[in-house]
Image (spheres, rainbow, N blue to C red):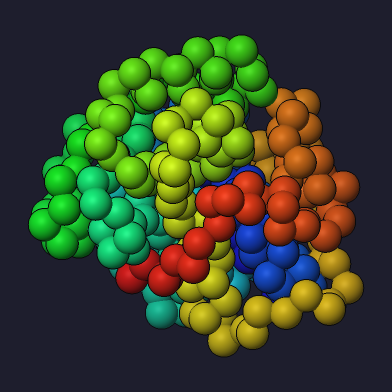
Length: 274
C-alpha cells in the first residue's frame, strides 16, 4: 500500500516521518516541487495546478491515499482536490493544531508563513476552535525557506525574529507550517521556559492510517521510499540530510520518535478533521 505526500519542499518530511514511524511497512511516495518552490507566495492557480499535477502522477503510480502536509496548499486547494479524487482515493489535508492547543494553553501564538497568517482560512480556524482563548498570529517570513535550504543560521535568525514578536504571555506556540517541526529544538530553546509547542504532523499521519483502515504498528518490515522532484524521479535534496528524519527517509529506514519532535513537545494531539 502506497501513501503519497505532496508539498513544495521539505515540509512533507515531518508527516512522512510520522507515517513511517507508525506504519513502517507502507510504501511512501514523496512529491516535492523544487522548480516551483516555495508555494507560499505563489498564486492560487499556480499552487492548485502544481498540486493537481503531483496528485495525478501519484495516483497513476499507485498511491492509495494523498496527504497534503502543507497548510498553504490545504488552505488553497484541498476542497478541489477532494472533489477530483475522493472517494476512491482519500485526501488528507493539514491545518494548524489550534483546537488541542486551546484546551491546554491560556494564551496562544500561531506561527505560520505570511500567506497562511493572512488567510481567511486561518482566521476561521481560530474563530471556530480557539475556544475563546486569546490568539496572536505571528508571520515568520523566511523561516520555511531557510529550513528548505538546510540553512541553520538563517533559520535561527528567523526564529529569533518570530520570538521577538511573540508576546511573553503566550504559553503555547502552534507551529502552523509543516516545515517548522524540523527546527523545533531551536524554537523551543529560544522561547521562554515552560512554553509548549503544538504541531499537527502526528495527527495527520494517524488520520491517514484511519482513512486507509490501517492500524498503527511498528513491527513491519520497512517499505520503500520513492521521491519525485517536480514530476521526475530523484532523491531527497542534500538539505534534507540536515535533519534526522530526512536522513532516515533518504535511507528508507525506520524513523525513531525522537527524530520527529523533542520529547518535551510531544503531547497527545487529536487528529484534525481535514
